[in-house]
Image 1: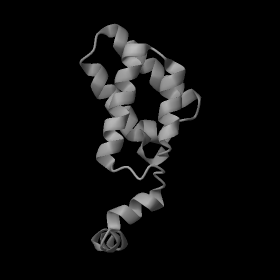
Image 2: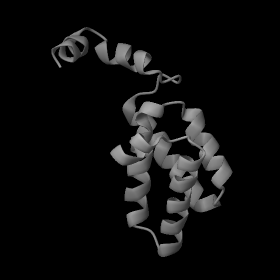
Image 3: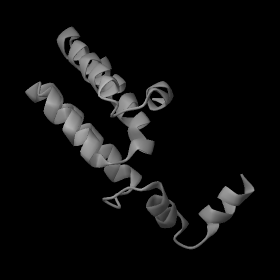
Image 4: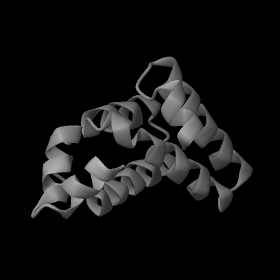
Length: 108
């Protein structure tokens, strides 16, 4: 914990951690959240399971996949039963394709 505090206190510490964690787009957390939300909303509109899976995989942020799970669940809470079933199918597919790990599913 002390080492993490030191890393975060260093000038540009968050940027360095972002590079260490491997976000290829160098996107901020807020940008990743917004991108995730857009992917999920597009999936609800298009029902294109393959495209949604591909987009999430292309984000290339496996350490952040818990946020995909969380946002999918939260977004589906305000949807009709059909959209809830679609979101459930997407999460199941992301798990079966091993795009999102079991651990990230659990955290999300």
